[in-house]
Image (tube, rainbow, N blue to C red; front, side, top):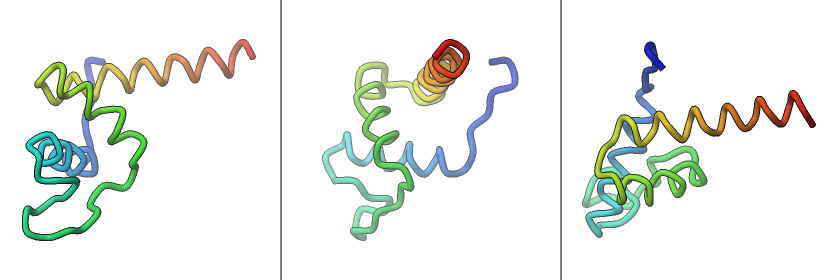
Length: 78
C-alpha cells in the first residue's frame, strides 16, 4: 500500500469514468466516439465506486487490494 502506483492506462480509465458519470458517455474526448478503455469489467466495477466516493486514487487502490487478497485466498485454500 505504501508504494502503490497507477499506470497511464488507469488514468485513461479514470478520465473515461469521469466523462461517463458526467453524462457524456464512455469516451476520452467529448467529440470522438472512441473506446479508450481496455478493460470494460474493471471500468464498470470502478464507476459506481467513484460515484459513491468522488475520489480517484483510493477508489482504484482499495478494490485492487481486495481483489488481489481474494485471488490469493482462492489460490491458497481452494
